Amino acid sequence: MRGGEVRPGLQLSTTRLLLGYDRVVFENVTLGVRLGWVLRGGGPRPSGAEAPEFLPFHGEVRAGYTFGARPFARPGFRGSLFVFGGIAQFDTEYQVFVEEDTTKPPPASQLDNPPSQTLSAYRKSGTGFVGLGAAATYAFSPSLALSAALKFTKPFPSTGTVLSPELSFSYAF
Image 1 (cartoon, helix red, strand yellow):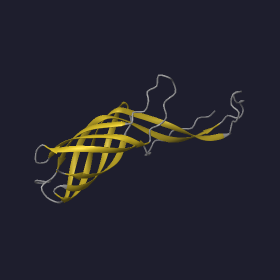
Image 2 (cartoon, rainbow, N blue to C red):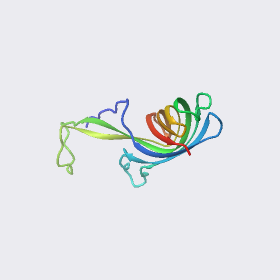
Image 3 (cartoon, helix red, strand yellow):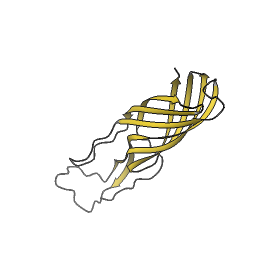
Image 4 (cartoon, helix red, strand yellow):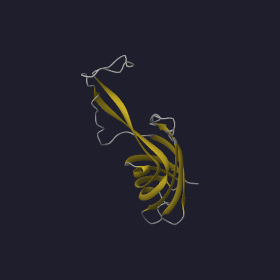
């Protein structure tokens, strides 16, 4: 069998739903926590009885800085930067084209041997991570806002690079 190759590039990975809490600790500085669950994208369990299961939990702590004078006291646009770290696993599925070597007979246990096929290969990254991000927020009032963020994440010990969008709605109380 001739193997295909996993091409690098942007791929869809796990999709998560998170619930967060952020506290303003200084005028422009926040500390927060995010807890959540993977909704889509956990790959299959690797071969072998000792292989670990996919980790569907997401736990994250974050510290952020929001630009401007008293940014949480008024409505309007505001920007922020943040750093974060936590525990999560990121599984990315790649489609790999495989062409069979038809000069060799298939194993006796294999009933069908197509000349070519497309298989799914998974890259599993995590279960720890660190990263940084930037957010643009529109506050409708001092207590109600909508944010869009872009996060750059480095998982470990099995590494990779994760670039992910984040959309959030916040209510201050």
